[in-house]
Image 1 (cartoon, helix red, strand yellow):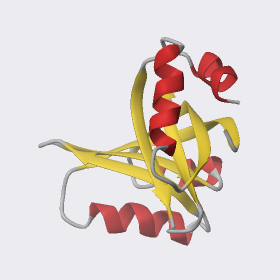
Image 2 (tube, rainbow, N blue to C red):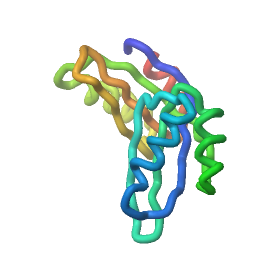
Image 3 (tube, rainbow, N blue to C red):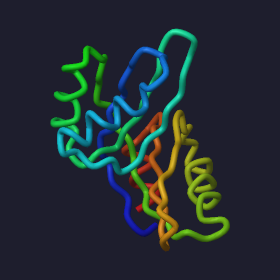
Image 4 (tube, rainbow, N blue to C red):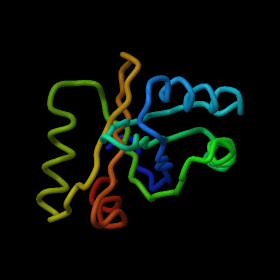
Length: 131
């Protein structure tokens, strides 16, 4: 793999209401925090953001001022080449090592690489498997 790291993402629980995406991303921008990757889901009562940022401490402080629940979670980040089958190779390696992926999302800007963000049942073992 190109670049494998154990990092932290922020899980942010917000109200589920119109404009919440702009409010969360605007809060990060106003705090001077760059967004590297994100995954957003909603349920009837709440929104859930998973954010990989340039500065989690700053982001957490800014988001808490809005009253949102914020917690830091360990994740594995894997930079892979932007080509057909690259993600399948990561999945196969983790599957062969009997590592369950609980959450996965990716970020790409259309350049030559993709950043995968994975939360697994065994991040350290996944790190060793993929490096």
